Length: 382
Image 1 (cartoon, rainbow, N blue to C red):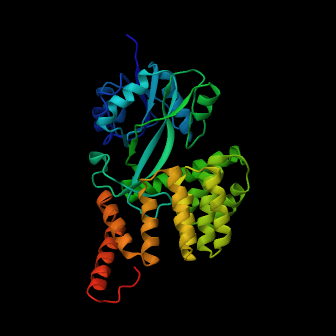
Image 2 (cartoon, helix red, strand yellow):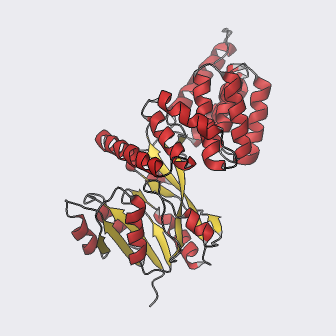
Image 3 (cartoon, rainbow, N blue to C red):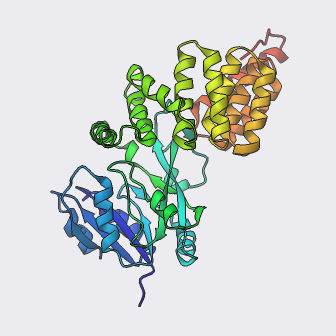
């Protein structure tokens, strides 16, 4: 009998997470291939007990090399990439099966990286689409990867960190489609010590990746992002300046311009920030965060007509149901004195994102201001 879908993963010291992970996904995969890179907690035995095929591979500071061992060992016609701290909602299993049963193609999957830090560069609020996975979470940031693809000898991972099969999929002529199924990642809501170890590992591997190819724009963006997240904006700035000057490489350049624009706004250089953000929205119109940042630059100058025009353009390409755009509109309405409209939007946004404390606080404040105005108080802006 042909093996249709192989789950492929790499693990190390995942004895706590792996049994539950494999049990949850047991109805999804026909074969599970687990590559162990040096566990000392019994992870391989637990994987075998759950029915997985286990391969041992020594860790060599290269995620792509380890993942390619899994690809070589898999027998399924389609390969599904997951890690032990990730999950696909049970309600999405039929969707995964349908994708795996379809014509050969590469599926780009959104990864929802849950995090509690609302200051994250690309944080967005949960909205209740996945009640079980979102339980206890306030928000997440999205990364995207090819997570489901055919088993082909020509398709292998590249990159010792932030590894990807996308270039090989493109070179192999595979159609590229956006998956309707999300991957839920919980690695960023673990203990702080785990996060610190991850940051140290990522910084070391990104440095090695850049040493191998100093002109790799993706690696430059990865290093700059890590530096920003660890509070070293002065070191990130020259990397972002180099990225922003590159032509024709849309994704890293657009993100580089967005991140550099944030620094320029913080440095009180709004004109430069706005130029970078306009360029980023042209480079990658569907990238939400340059639009959000652009409205903030315009709002700082109380250019309300520009703010509302930017929001309209952003909704046309990013969708009309974007909570982060709603938040910027809410703030603009409140600050420009349109409190009744602001209160109505705040109520809708609070209902849509009940775990968003910032919006709940704004809703309460606007209600109070309108009540004071109705009672003859001074009202004023929010």
